[in-house]
Image (cartoon, rainbow, N blue to C red):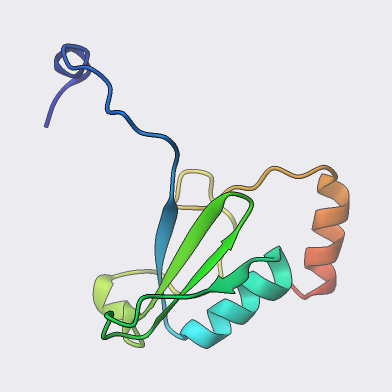
Length: 111
């Protein structure tokens, strides 16, 4: 792996933007409903060449690709609900009214 000094010797890649994040989930349909109902993402067409359960969603200039793995525990991934930890993997959204977002999430039974 390159350290920061070595990386500075290379020209930056010609990237335009972040296209999508991929997330493993136990139930693709439960996860789709969550991202649609809670965050307002919209399901988009997924290539039929993929031979595994999954879904693609899009909104806010970013895609979320859900990949179903009912035995997600095989990856030593914590699947029980837990408090948000800023040092753990996460997705972050900017919003116009944090208080309103918190109230709506609480109304939906989220912590």
